Image 1 (tube, rainbow, N blue to C red):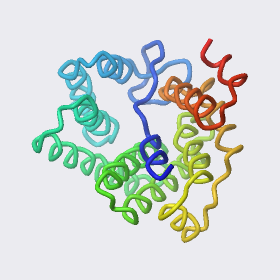
Image 2 (tube, rainbow, N blue to C red):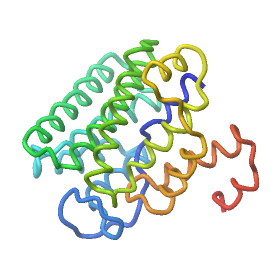
Image 3 (tube, one colour):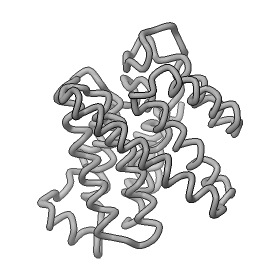
Image 4 (cartoon, helix red, strand yellow):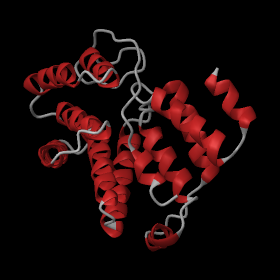
Length: 239
């Protein structure tokens, strides 16, 4: 379970029907069309097309972290399907660090900018995953912890944002399942985890998240089938 927390912490958001809306606003009925289309391209492994969509977001909103975050996800997706090159690794680190920098600047300008906290949490979570792959245990957990704090702040500022529940739910569930080095770190940070609370949050994300609903669904199916072995709960989600 040591790797599962971070491997699952911030997956690519799910896909919902696109509609015209104020750019980058997280709203259940009206997801941002460029984000949605870009994510569609990512799922179809159309990385160049995804980059065009996310580059458009950056050109329109250069001071907003969303476009930079999804550009980092393009590189992460390339790595995930096997394009594991020094060039892609360097690009991933640069893009995820750029996202963190832009998000923090946004927060400095406006401490109530919930969306900057949202993407800061996502970027920190993905950077934590990268550190974990290099077996940098303390660094990876510290980044994940900071990611969760950012998401919790986002949730306080925008209680209607259900996308944060994917990361928060996964964190609660998997910290309750950890062992070894990472279990020690959870005690160090005074977070023991709560399996049932994690499952509750994931179930809400399945039904109410804007961008993360599909990934929350995939996560719950995996948990119920392989970790909880509760097939009765898995079946309705699969159907």
